[in-house]
Length: 122
Picture 1 (cartoon, rainbow, N blue to C red):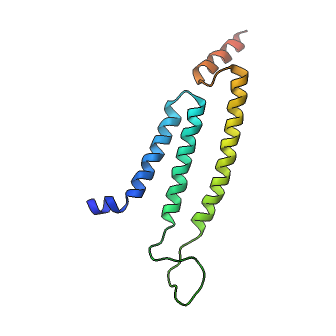
Picture 2 (picture 1 turned 60 degrees about the horizontal axis):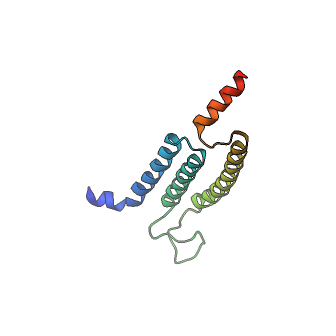
Picture 3 (picture 1 turned 90 degrees about the horizontal axis):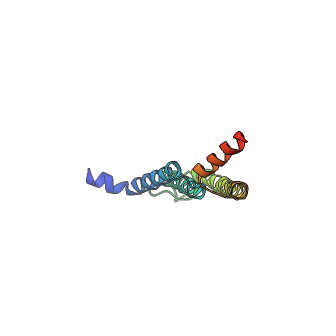
């Protein structure tokens, strides 16, 4: 049992980082911290997929006489796309946070909600 757990330590660490990111997103009222949690969660998912794509004894998918086992390049290609989408998501998130900060002079959800309720009552 212990050998199984130690043999899959990378998955346990990835799940730990994923849960830390999820907890940060859900528990923090600060928008910047929520965005940092989203980034941690996204990085953990990318690491998980790249770890799944590893093949013991596998080589690059180039046909040669000596190679018999090939690693599937699809997970790595998909994760490169996910990285690009993640960078765009983070940039949009930062832009929205800057706009919210200018409009409400706060990055805390509670303060923003109170100011929005005040504006509705006025």
